[in-house]
Image (cartoon, rainbow, N blue to C red; front, side):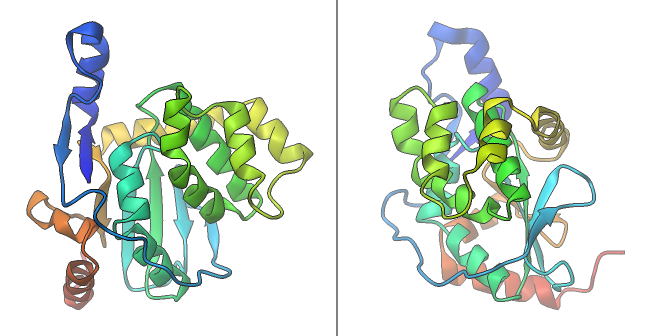
Length: 234
């Protein structure tokens, strides 16, 4: 798994031909060696958080809150959400063990902005979780075609029962949620996060030395158990 620094990405864009496209990526874990954790998610609550920029999945009253900072075009985020511990966190949210929050940046360009807009539109249909999974499953294929396009996102949405209709398609085609997209990206930019994917547990950042929790389910379990036993922040 890799982490891409926002600052380094922006520097790479500014330098254009002077730097490779992967500038700023740092190895994390053993990308490509894991397998997706399987299980039944079923129906799970999903809503826009009170701050207007965070998407909340699971029980808001859960004792544990895990916040994930992602960009849909980030390869490391795709690693985390497919063969890392992202699927495990989703299963735990569906089981009521924690509340899962998503802070979605779009600093990797127009494809990310289109994807975040589509994800916000899917939330209105109660299908954020489904499209979020489909976006990361389809990320590599989208990159081979130049990134997430409007038609490509609609094709991904067509694989999800009950998502596509006239209203959803219009929201995707017209970038209806552009204000959310920009506000969410500003919020991520203003946070402590310097690379994606990143994680907070009960409001505390997961530090560099603990980032193995993002690709090691046993380590994640231990980390969350310890977090649940800590006194709440005042």
